[in-house]
Amino acid sequence: KAGVTQTPRYLIKTRGQQVTLSCSPISGHRSVSWYQQTPGQGLQFLFEYFSETQRNKGNFPGRFSGRQFSNSRSEMNVSTLELGDSALYLCASSAGWATNEKLFFGSGTQLSVL
Amino acid sequence: SQQGEEDPQALSIQEGENATMNCSYKTSINNLQWYRQNSGRGLVHLILIRSNEREKHSGRLRVTLDTSKKSSSLLITASRAADTASYFCATEKNSGGSNYKLTFGKGTLLTVNP
Image (cartoon, each protein chain N blue to C red):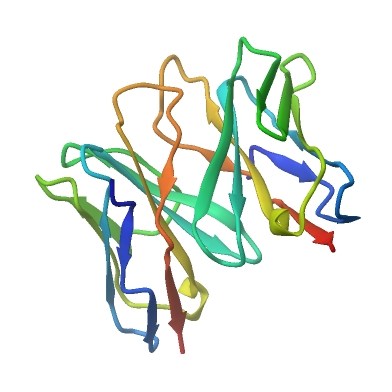
């Protein structure tokens, strides 16, 4: 099976712009989660989607949004970018049916905001 | 705030030695998981231990869980240079089911010197 695919791998934007990141989960997985990783804050949970529904959301401002499509692919969008949004954005997938599931991570999108 | 906190923050050992990393958490959990990350890439799942389990093994990995102390340890035996990576513990909080979210610690950077 192909793994979790994230595109693009690297992205450079300037303050005030917006960005869309894409994630394709492992085939058959219906849950997609997004995490932000920075040296200072570590890995922070953004949101989780299952069958196009957001089931949980982290403590991020409304500039961070996401969605999931009927084929389980997911996108996250960050509007009005700030310097502090520079981070590695990681997507993870799982079957999503129950607790005690492990996550399969993509390689991430490294976002730099100048 | 971080649910899991790893200790130590950094660990440097020689090939062939054992490496032990510890994780403490704050609330009741469904499970605790350990992940590995190589220099800014995606995380790879290592092992999941459920709240009613005390010890699990996987190859050279041994994980223990003490729910009374809210702590876990990861032991890597006979370490290799290829084990050099950051190791994270992550907890799934017990909220009467799954809340579809893992809370990660800030990680232990393990360096194995040849």
